[in-house]
Length: 222
Length: 222
Image (tube, rainbow over the protein chains, first blue to last red):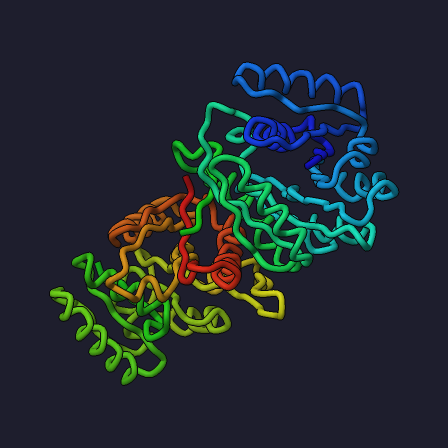
């Protein structure tokens, strides 16, 4: 399968790219607004992956080309650019494609991190509002610590909550999550349930800030 | 230590009462608007506890009397009654007492459960707004499944996130959480961080609704 990571030069995009490239046979396409930067990052990821003995299937392109090549398009850009990024690639998306929303809008003050949902309710729903009607949006991967994901020496053991309104698209993303060693996918229900998933991210950061040994902590439901 | 559970005849109150009564030497005082009901429930809990071989230290009173007797007062009433319950017991609270907020306001629709914070921001902050100034409010226990807690045959293994602005009160509540076998307390930061803790509760219910074998699931951060 072809997976594009728009904003794949950033934290969470890097982590997902490295894990999928190492743990699966999927083709990973790093997208960036700047195609040179995407290419450089893809090179960098290939070097990291070769050190692990993996045969990296990673390329870098501008976001639009990346989205065009892929069936699964992960919108791993900062949340303030999520909608505009999807708008910019919408013309190349169509039936059979899936948009994945891992971003979370947060604010920070003296107390800690707080959930700051956009007007649409969640980043995932904001993306859904501008996505082509035949392209389902699935939310996932919000609660993975980028540092834990990017460090390939680190064994993951974390849950990924998947929400969405299209059952088949959800199953695809659940399978992609479980393709990564140590991740378990859980069904969070329809896209309208995404708020309580996104809001878990600032909680994880607050726990890391206030407790020893909880840097890059993940979550398990059991 | 004397612990009052206002609304201790309800789900989460029952679970905390049974666990503290079994696992600790603390005196547990069940509070209810109806003192007869509190007494009946305390009797019921004593019977359950005797079957486990424990020596139950559980009494039942009206909410005001329960609050008066206790140093730690858990507001385990439904969220819509949290503020009015605290207002009703405020005259008997004073320095050295601690209010604990475990309630969460939620809505339910066809998609699932959603977080529905009160105007004050959280139930904990709504309580804080009406609590006597010298009585700190600590939030905790929101994310424990009442069923898992009440079933004493069930071994717990879950995290309790504690938030609050008074360090000493927080340490007291963290210790009370860890007094229950299988619970680990984590510091979530100041009371202003409580929103992302309360909103984890509807997520846990959504996961239970959408995944096999996740009834009464708890959460672990690791």
